[in-house]
Length: 359
Ligand code: HEM
Ligand code: HEM
Image (cartoon, rainbow, N blue to C red; front, top):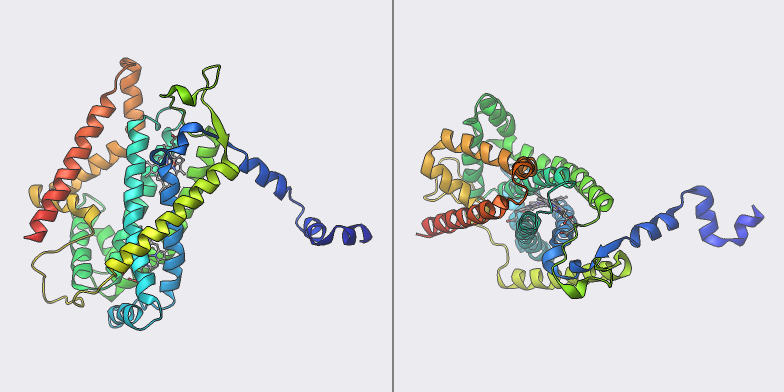
Protein backbone atom coordinates (compact mmCIF):
# COMPACT_ATOMS: atom_id res chain seq x y z
CA UNK A 1 0.00 0.00 0.00
CA UNK A 2 2.78 2.40 1.03
CA UNK A 3 4.80 1.32 -1.96
CA UNK A 4 1.83 2.14 -4.22
CA UNK A 5 1.44 5.57 -2.64
CA UNK A 6 5.04 6.37 -3.53
CA UNK A 7 4.42 5.66 -7.22
CA UNK A 8 1.64 8.21 -7.64
CA UNK A 9 -1.24 7.94 -10.07
CA UNK A 10 0.74 5.75 -12.49
CA UNK A 11 1.38 3.19 -9.73
CA UNK A 12 -2.27 3.27 -8.63
CA UNK A 13 -3.41 2.57 -12.19
CA UNK A 14 -0.83 -0.17 -12.84
CA UNK A 15 -1.93 -2.04 -9.71
CA UNK A 16 -5.53 -2.06 -10.94
CA UNK A 17 -4.88 -2.66 -14.65
CA UNK A 18 -1.88 -4.99 -14.52
CA UNK A 19 -1.18 -4.95 -18.26
CA UNK A 20 2.13 -4.01 -19.88
CA UNK A 21 0.35 -1.08 -21.61
CA UNK A 22 3.37 1.20 -21.92
CA UNK A 23 5.56 -1.56 -23.29
CA UNK A 24 2.81 -2.61 -25.73
CA UNK A 25 2.40 0.95 -26.97
CA UNK A 26 6.15 1.44 -27.35
CA UNK A 27 6.40 -1.82 -29.28
CA UNK A 28 3.48 -0.93 -31.55
CA UNK A 29 4.80 2.56 -32.13
CA UNK A 30 8.32 1.49 -33.05
CA UNK A 31 7.19 -0.60 -36.04
CA UNK A 32 9.56 0.11 -38.92
CA UNK A 33 7.81 1.66 -41.92
CA UNK A 34 9.36 1.33 -45.42
CA UNK A 35 10.88 4.59 -46.71
CA UNK A 36 8.53 4.85 -49.69
CA UNK A 37 5.57 5.40 -47.34
CA UNK A 38 6.78 8.98 -47.07
CA UNK A 39 4.89 9.54 -50.31
CA UNK A 40 1.14 10.03 -50.05
CA UNK A 41 0.39 7.65 -52.92
CA UNK A 42 1.76 4.82 -50.77
CA UNK A 43 -0.11 5.53 -47.56
CA UNK A 44 -3.58 6.40 -48.86
CA UNK A 45 -5.05 3.78 -46.51
CA UNK A 46 -4.23 6.19 -43.66
CA UNK A 47 -6.16 8.96 -45.45
CA UNK A 48 -9.23 6.72 -45.77
CA UNK A 49 -8.91 5.88 -42.05
CA UNK A 50 -8.76 9.57 -41.04
CA UNK A 51 -11.84 10.40 -43.11
CA UNK A 52 -13.67 7.44 -41.58
CA UNK A 53 -12.94 8.89 -38.12
CA UNK A 54 -14.41 12.24 -39.31
CA UNK A 55 -17.51 10.30 -40.45
CA UNK A 56 -17.90 8.56 -37.11
CA UNK A 57 -17.59 11.82 -35.11
CA UNK A 58 -19.88 13.92 -37.36
CA UNK A 59 -22.28 10.97 -37.81
CA UNK A 60 -22.72 10.52 -34.04
CA UNK A 61 -23.40 14.25 -33.64
CA UNK A 62 -25.93 14.20 -36.52
CA UNK A 63 -27.66 11.20 -34.90
CA UNK A 64 -28.63 13.43 -31.93
CA UNK A 65 -30.92 15.39 -34.26
CA UNK A 66 -31.87 12.98 -37.03
CA UNK A 67 -35.32 11.32 -36.79
CA UNK A 68 -35.69 8.05 -38.79
CA UNK A 69 -39.39 8.40 -39.59
CA UNK A 70 -40.76 9.16 -43.09
CA UNK A 71 -42.99 11.91 -41.65
CA UNK A 72 -40.12 13.60 -39.81
CA UNK A 73 -36.81 12.56 -41.47
CA UNK A 74 -36.73 15.27 -44.14
CA UNK A 75 -37.84 17.91 -41.64
CA UNK A 76 -35.16 16.82 -39.15
CA UNK A 77 -32.47 17.20 -41.83
CA UNK A 78 -33.96 20.62 -42.65
CA UNK A 79 -33.82 21.49 -38.94
CA UNK A 80 -30.15 20.41 -38.79
CA UNK A 81 -29.34 22.50 -41.88
CA UNK A 82 -31.24 25.66 -40.98
CA UNK A 83 -31.62 25.89 -37.20
CA UNK A 84 -29.12 23.77 -35.25
CA UNK A 85 -26.00 25.89 -34.51
CA UNK A 86 -23.28 24.76 -36.94
CA UNK A 87 -25.67 21.99 -38.09
CA UNK A 88 -25.10 22.95 -41.74
CA UNK A 89 -21.36 22.60 -41.15
CA UNK A 90 -21.67 19.16 -39.51
CA UNK A 91 -23.88 17.93 -42.33
CA UNK A 92 -21.60 19.33 -45.00
CA UNK A 93 -18.52 17.83 -43.30
CA UNK A 94 -20.28 14.44 -43.17
CA UNK A 95 -21.32 14.68 -46.81
CA UNK A 96 -18.00 15.85 -48.27
CA UNK A 97 -15.83 13.68 -46.07
CA UNK A 98 -17.88 10.64 -47.19
CA UNK A 99 -17.05 11.54 -50.80
CA UNK A 100 -13.41 12.05 -49.84
CA UNK A 101 -13.35 8.69 -48.10
CA UNK A 102 -14.70 6.93 -51.19
CA UNK A 103 -12.07 8.67 -53.39
CA UNK A 104 -9.29 7.72 -50.93
CA UNK A 105 -10.46 4.09 -50.82
CA UNK A 106 -10.59 3.88 -54.65
CA UNK A 107 -7.08 5.37 -54.98
CA UNK A 108 -5.80 3.07 -52.20
CA UNK A 109 -7.22 0.02 -54.02
CA UNK A 110 -5.54 1.21 -57.25
CA UNK A 111 -2.20 1.60 -55.50
CA UNK A 112 -2.47 -1.86 -53.92
CA UNK A 113 -3.58 -3.41 -57.21
CA UNK A 114 -1.04 -1.82 -59.55
CA UNK A 115 1.90 -2.56 -57.22
CA UNK A 116 0.80 -6.19 -56.84
CA UNK A 117 0.67 -5.70 -53.03
CA UNK A 118 -2.26 -8.16 -52.83
CA UNK A 119 0.00 -11.07 -53.83
CA UNK A 120 1.29 -13.76 -51.45
CA UNK A 121 1.16 -13.47 -48.42
CA UNK A 122 -1.39 -10.61 -48.52
CA UNK A 123 -4.22 -12.33 -50.44
CA UNK A 124 -6.52 -12.52 -47.41
CA UNK A 125 -6.04 -8.85 -46.65
CA UNK A 126 -7.23 -8.05 -50.17
CA UNK A 127 -10.34 -10.19 -49.53
CA UNK A 128 -10.93 -8.33 -46.23
CA UNK A 129 -10.35 -5.05 -48.13
CA UNK A 130 -13.00 -6.04 -50.70
CA UNK A 131 -15.55 -6.34 -47.90
CA UNK A 132 -14.38 -2.96 -46.56
CA UNK A 133 -15.06 -1.53 -50.03
CA UNK A 134 -18.59 -3.00 -50.10
CA UNK A 135 -19.22 -1.69 -46.56
CA UNK A 136 -18.04 1.80 -47.54
CA UNK A 137 -20.39 1.86 -50.54
CA UNK A 138 -23.24 0.55 -48.36
CA UNK A 139 -22.56 3.42 -45.94
CA UNK A 140 -22.81 5.92 -48.79
CA UNK A 141 -25.98 4.35 -50.18
CA UNK A 142 -27.86 4.09 -46.86
CA UNK A 143 -26.72 7.59 -45.79
CA UNK A 144 -28.01 9.09 -49.04
CA UNK A 145 -31.39 7.41 -48.42
CA UNK A 146 -31.66 8.83 -44.89
CA UNK A 147 -32.03 12.41 -46.18
CA UNK A 148 -35.41 11.35 -47.60
CA UNK A 149 -35.37 13.60 -50.64
CA UNK A 150 -36.99 12.56 -53.91
CA UNK A 151 -33.68 11.19 -55.17
CA UNK A 152 -32.97 9.28 -51.94
CA UNK A 153 -36.37 7.62 -52.14
CA UNK A 154 -36.18 6.68 -55.81
CA UNK A 155 -32.53 5.62 -55.55
CA UNK A 156 -33.58 3.13 -52.86
CA UNK A 157 -36.41 1.94 -55.12
CA UNK A 158 -34.00 1.18 -57.99
CA UNK A 159 -31.58 -0.58 -55.62
CA UNK A 160 -34.50 -2.66 -54.32
CA UNK A 161 -35.44 -3.70 -57.89
CA UNK A 162 -31.80 -4.58 -58.61
CA UNK A 163 -31.62 -6.78 -55.52
CA UNK A 164 -34.95 -8.38 -56.37
CA UNK A 165 -33.61 -9.47 -59.76
CA UNK A 166 -30.75 -11.46 -58.21
CA UNK A 167 -31.13 -15.21 -58.78
CA UNK A 168 -32.51 -17.43 -55.94
CA UNK A 169 -32.20 -15.16 -52.90
CA UNK A 170 -33.08 -11.88 -54.71
CA UNK A 171 -36.78 -11.44 -53.84
CA UNK A 172 -36.37 -12.54 -50.20
CA UNK A 173 -33.34 -10.30 -49.74
CA UNK A 174 -35.08 -7.30 -51.33
CA UNK A 175 -38.16 -7.76 -49.14
CA UNK A 176 -35.99 -8.07 -46.06
CA UNK A 177 -33.99 -4.96 -46.97
CA UNK A 178 -37.11 -2.88 -47.67
CA UNK A 179 -39.25 -4.42 -44.94
CA UNK A 180 -41.96 -5.05 -47.56
CA UNK A 181 -42.69 -5.15 -51.27
CA UNK A 182 -41.89 -1.45 -51.81
CA UNK A 183 -39.92 1.31 -50.09
CA UNK A 184 -41.96 2.19 -46.98
CA UNK A 185 -41.54 3.51 -43.44
CA UNK A 186 -39.91 0.16 -42.58
CA UNK A 187 -37.20 0.80 -45.16
CA UNK A 188 -36.09 4.02 -43.52
CA UNK A 189 -35.78 2.47 -40.05
CA UNK A 190 -33.87 -0.47 -41.55
CA UNK A 191 -31.48 1.77 -43.48
CA UNK A 192 -30.99 3.90 -40.38
CA UNK A 193 -30.19 0.83 -38.28
CA UNK A 194 -27.76 -0.34 -40.97
CA UNK A 195 -26.12 3.08 -41.25
CA UNK A 196 -25.56 3.83 -37.58
CA UNK A 197 -25.51 0.31 -36.07
CA UNK A 198 -24.65 -2.69 -38.20
CA UNK A 199 -22.32 -1.10 -40.79
CA UNK A 200 -20.14 0.71 -38.19
CA UNK A 201 -19.82 -2.54 -36.19
CA UNK A 202 -18.90 -4.54 -39.31
CA UNK A 203 -16.50 -1.80 -40.44
CA UNK A 204 -14.68 -1.70 -37.09
CA UNK A 205 -14.28 -5.48 -37.15
CA UNK A 206 -12.98 -5.49 -40.73
CA UNK A 207 -10.60 -2.59 -40.11
CA UNK A 208 -9.16 -4.27 -36.99
CA UNK A 209 -8.54 -7.46 -39.03
CA UNK A 210 -7.06 -5.32 -41.87
CA UNK A 211 -4.66 -3.49 -39.53
CA UNK A 212 -3.64 -6.64 -37.62
CA UNK A 213 -2.66 -8.32 -40.91
CA UNK A 214 -0.86 -5.18 -42.17
CA UNK A 215 1.06 -5.14 -38.89
CA UNK A 216 1.84 -8.86 -39.09
CA UNK A 217 3.14 -8.69 -42.70
CA UNK A 218 4.54 -5.17 -42.66
CA UNK A 219 3.72 -2.93 -45.63
CA UNK A 220 5.01 -4.44 -48.90
CA UNK A 221 8.49 -3.42 -50.01
CA UNK A 222 8.84 -1.76 -53.36
CA UNK A 223 12.31 -0.44 -54.08
CA UNK A 224 12.48 1.51 -57.24
CA UNK A 225 14.83 4.27 -56.16
CA UNK A 226 18.46 4.00 -55.19
CA UNK A 227 18.26 6.67 -52.49
CA UNK A 228 15.74 4.50 -50.64
CA UNK A 229 18.20 1.61 -50.21
CA UNK A 230 20.93 1.25 -47.59
CA UNK A 231 24.55 0.26 -48.34
CA UNK A 232 23.55 -3.44 -48.46
CA UNK A 233 20.82 -2.75 -50.99
CA UNK A 234 18.01 -3.27 -48.44
CA UNK A 235 15.09 -0.83 -48.22
CA UNK A 236 15.51 1.99 -45.69
CA UNK A 237 12.88 2.22 -42.97
CA UNK A 238 11.79 4.81 -40.40
CA UNK A 239 9.83 4.42 -37.15
CA UNK A 240 6.03 4.55 -37.13
CA UNK A 241 6.12 6.80 -34.05
CA UNK A 242 6.69 9.70 -34.13
CA UNK A 243 7.66 10.06 -37.84
CA UNK A 244 4.80 8.37 -39.68
CA UNK A 245 2.26 9.25 -37.00
CA UNK A 246 3.09 12.96 -37.32
CA UNK A 247 2.86 12.76 -41.12
CA UNK A 248 -0.66 11.33 -40.71
CA UNK A 249 -1.56 14.14 -38.26
CA UNK A 250 -0.44 16.73 -40.84
CA UNK A 251 -2.43 14.95 -43.57
CA UNK A 252 -5.44 14.91 -41.20
CA UNK A 253 -5.24 18.67 -40.54
CA UNK A 254 -4.86 19.31 -44.29
CA UNK A 255 -7.91 17.14 -45.01
CA UNK A 256 -10.03 18.94 -42.40
CA UNK A 257 -9.08 22.33 -43.88
CA UNK A 258 -9.90 21.09 -47.39
CA UNK A 259 -13.25 19.56 -46.39
CA UNK A 260 -14.11 22.77 -44.49
CA UNK A 261 -13.34 24.93 -47.57
CA UNK A 262 -15.45 22.65 -49.81
CA UNK A 263 -18.28 22.78 -47.22
CA UNK A 264 -18.15 26.58 -47.19
CA UNK A 265 -18.27 26.82 -50.98
CA UNK A 266 -20.78 23.99 -51.52
CA UNK A 267 -22.76 23.49 -48.28
CA UNK A 268 -25.00 20.38 -48.21
CA UNK A 269 -28.39 21.46 -49.58
CA UNK A 270 -31.83 19.87 -49.71
CA UNK A 271 -33.88 18.95 -52.76
CA UNK A 272 -37.62 18.23 -52.80
CA UNK A 273 -39.06 15.91 -50.14
CA UNK A 274 -39.63 12.25 -51.15
CA UNK A 275 -42.93 11.65 -52.91
CA UNK A 276 -43.73 7.98 -53.62
CA UNK A 277 -46.39 9.03 -56.16
CA UNK A 278 -44.14 11.13 -58.44
CA UNK A 279 -41.20 9.50 -60.22
CA UNK A 280 -38.50 12.11 -60.94
CA UNK A 281 -37.35 12.52 -64.54
CA UNK A 282 -33.84 11.30 -63.71
CA UNK A 283 -33.13 9.01 -60.77
CA UNK A 284 -29.68 9.91 -59.60
CA UNK A 285 -27.57 7.89 -57.16
CA UNK A 286 -24.26 8.99 -55.60
CA UNK A 287 -21.57 9.40 -58.31
CA UNK A 288 -19.78 6.18 -57.33
CA UNK A 289 -22.86 4.19 -58.40
CA UNK A 290 -23.18 5.93 -61.80
CA UNK A 291 -21.33 3.12 -63.62
CA UNK A 292 -23.75 0.54 -62.17
CA UNK A 293 -26.72 2.60 -63.39
CA UNK A 294 -25.19 2.90 -66.88
CA UNK A 295 -24.64 -0.85 -67.03
CA UNK A 296 -28.17 -1.45 -65.80
CA UNK A 297 -29.58 0.76 -68.55
CA UNK A 298 -27.38 -0.94 -71.17
CA UNK A 299 -28.05 -4.62 -70.45
CA UNK A 300 -31.27 -4.74 -68.41
CA UNK A 301 -31.96 -5.74 -64.83
CA UNK A 302 -31.39 -9.53 -64.82
CA UNK A 303 -28.24 -9.44 -66.94
CA UNK A 304 -26.84 -6.54 -64.87
CA UNK A 305 -27.27 -8.43 -61.60
CA UNK A 306 -25.63 -11.61 -62.90
CA UNK A 307 -22.69 -9.82 -64.56
CA UNK A 308 -22.12 -7.50 -61.59
CA UNK A 309 -22.12 -10.52 -59.27
CA UNK A 310 -19.54 -12.23 -61.51
CA UNK A 311 -17.37 -9.11 -61.70
CA UNK A 312 -17.50 -8.71 -57.91
CA UNK A 313 -16.40 -12.35 -57.43
CA UNK A 314 -13.46 -11.90 -59.81
CA UNK A 315 -12.48 -8.71 -57.91
CA UNK A 316 -12.66 -10.38 -54.48
CA UNK A 317 -10.78 -13.53 -55.51
CA UNK A 318 -8.35 -11.82 -57.91
CA UNK A 319 -5.23 -12.58 -55.78
CA UNK A 320 -5.95 -16.30 -56.15
CA UNK A 321 -6.77 -16.09 -59.89
CA UNK A 322 -3.61 -14.02 -60.44
CA UNK A 323 -1.62 -16.54 -58.33
CA UNK A 324 -2.83 -19.42 -60.53
CA UNK A 325 -1.86 -17.50 -63.70
CA UNK A 326 1.58 -16.65 -62.33
CA UNK A 327 2.28 -20.25 -61.32
CA UNK A 328 2.07 -21.11 -65.04
CA UNK A 329 3.69 -17.94 -66.33
CA UNK A 330 5.76 -16.48 -63.48
CA UNK A 331 6.44 -13.18 -65.25
CA UNK A 332 2.82 -12.51 -66.19
CA UNK A 333 1.73 -8.95 -65.54
CA UNK A 334 -1.71 -9.56 -67.02
CA UNK A 335 -3.13 -7.85 -63.91
CA UNK A 336 -1.67 -4.48 -64.94
CA UNK A 337 -3.24 -4.65 -68.41
CA UNK A 338 -6.59 -5.83 -67.03
CA UNK A 339 -6.47 -3.18 -64.31
CA UNK A 340 -5.92 -0.39 -66.85
CA UNK A 341 -8.80 -1.67 -69.02
CA UNK A 342 -11.01 -1.89 -65.90
CA UNK A 343 -10.21 1.67 -64.79
CA UNK A 344 -10.87 3.02 -68.31
CA UNK A 345 -14.22 1.17 -68.59
CA UNK A 346 -15.41 2.34 -65.15
CA UNK A 347 -14.34 5.94 -65.83
CA UNK A 348 -16.03 6.04 -69.26
CA UNK A 349 -19.27 4.57 -67.86
CA UNK A 350 -19.25 7.03 -64.93
CA UNK A 351 -18.66 10.07 -67.16
CA UNK A 352 -21.22 8.79 -69.69
CA UNK A 353 -23.91 8.41 -67.01
CA UNK A 354 -23.03 11.83 -65.52
CA UNK A 355 -23.48 13.35 -68.98
CA UNK A 356 -26.84 11.59 -69.49
CA UNK A 357 -28.08 12.73 -66.06
CA UNK A 358 -27.01 16.31 -66.72
CA UNK A 359 -28.98 16.53 -70.03
C1 HEM B 1 -11.66 2.36 -45.18
C2 HEM B 1 -10.95 1.63 -46.01
C3 HEM B 1 -9.50 1.21 -45.83
C4 HEM B 1 -8.57 1.60 -44.90
C5 HEM B 1 -8.76 2.62 -43.76
C6 HEM B 1 -7.35 0.90 -45.21
C7 HEM B 1 -6.16 1.07 -44.52
C8 HEM B 1 -4.94 0.56 -44.93
C9 HEM B 1 -3.64 1.01 -44.46
C10 HEM B 1 -3.41 2.10 -43.40
C11 HEM B 1 -2.69 0.29 -45.11
C12 HEM B 1 -1.16 0.43 -44.97
C13 HEM B 1 -0.51 0.98 -46.23
C14 HEM B 1 -1.26 2.03 -47.01
O1 HEM B 1 -1.72 3.01 -46.41
O2 HEM B 1 -1.41 1.86 -48.24
C15 HEM B 1 -3.39 -0.66 -45.98
C16 HEM B 1 -2.80 -1.64 -46.75
C17 HEM B 1 -3.49 -2.56 -47.53
N1 HEM B 1 -4.81 -2.49 -47.89
FE1 HEM B 1 -6.17 -1.21 -47.09
N2 HEM B 1 -7.54 0.06 -46.28
C18 HEM B 1 -8.86 0.24 -46.70
C19 HEM B 1 -9.44 -0.38 -47.79
C20 HEM B 1 -8.86 -1.37 -48.54
C21 HEM B 1 -9.48 -2.03 -49.68
C22 HEM B 1 -10.87 -1.66 -50.22
C23 HEM B 1 -8.59 -2.99 -50.13
C24 HEM B 1 -8.72 -3.96 -51.28
C25 HEM B 1 -9.78 -4.25 -51.95
C26 HEM B 1 -7.40 -2.93 -49.28
C27 HEM B 1 -6.29 -3.75 -49.38
C28 HEM B 1 -5.10 -3.53 -48.75
C29 HEM B 1 -3.90 -4.35 -48.91
C30 HEM B 1 -3.77 -5.63 -49.75
C31 HEM B 1 -2.89 -3.73 -48.14
C32 HEM B 1 -1.44 -4.18 -48.00
C33 HEM B 1 -0.63 -3.32 -48.94
C34 HEM B 1 0.86 -3.41 -48.76
O3 HEM B 1 1.34 -4.13 -47.89
O4 HEM B 1 1.54 -2.71 -49.55
N3 HEM B 1 -7.59 -1.92 -48.35
N4 HEM B 1 -4.75 -0.47 -45.87
C1 HEM C 1 -20.62 5.68 -37.12
C2 HEM C 1 -20.65 6.20 -38.30
C3 HEM C 1 -21.77 7.03 -38.87
C4 HEM C 1 -22.90 7.58 -38.29
C5 HEM C 1 -23.33 7.49 -36.83
C6 HEM C 1 -23.62 8.28 -39.34
C7 HEM C 1 -24.84 8.97 -39.19
C8 HEM C 1 -25.55 9.62 -40.17
C9 HEM C 1 -26.80 10.32 -40.00
C10 HEM C 1 -27.56 10.43 -38.68
C11 HEM C 1 -27.17 10.82 -41.21
C12 HEM C 1 -28.47 11.60 -41.52
C13 HEM C 1 -28.32 13.06 -41.32
C14 HEM C 1 -27.98 13.83 -42.58
O1 HEM C 1 -28.40 13.47 -43.68
O2 HEM C 1 -27.26 14.80 -42.48
C15 HEM C 1 -26.15 10.46 -42.17
C16 HEM C 1 -26.14 10.82 -43.50
C17 HEM C 1 -25.19 10.40 -44.41
N1 HEM C 1 -24.12 9.56 -44.15
FE1 HEM C 1 -23.54 8.87 -42.36
N2 HEM C 1 -22.92 8.15 -40.54
C18 HEM C 1 -21.79 7.39 -40.29
C19 HEM C 1 -20.82 7.02 -41.21
C20 HEM C 1 -20.88 7.27 -42.55
C21 HEM C 1 -19.93 6.82 -43.53
C22 HEM C 1 -18.67 6.00 -43.22
C23 HEM C 1 -20.35 7.28 -44.76
C24 HEM C 1 -19.75 7.10 -46.14
C25 HEM C 1 -18.70 6.52 -46.51
C26 HEM C 1 -21.57 8.02 -44.54
C27 HEM C 1 -22.30 8.65 -45.54
C28 HEM C 1 -23.44 9.41 -45.36
C29 HEM C 1 -24.09 10.17 -46.41
C30 HEM C 1 -23.65 10.27 -47.89
C31 HEM C 1 -25.18 10.81 -45.80
C32 HEM C 1 -26.15 11.80 -46.47
C33 HEM C 1 -25.55 13.17 -46.29
C34 HEM C 1 -26.43 14.32 -46.68
O3 HEM C 1 -26.62 14.57 -47.88
O4 HEM C 1 -26.95 14.98 -45.77
N3 HEM C 1 -21.88 8.00 -43.19
N4 HEM C 1 -25.16 9.71 -41.51
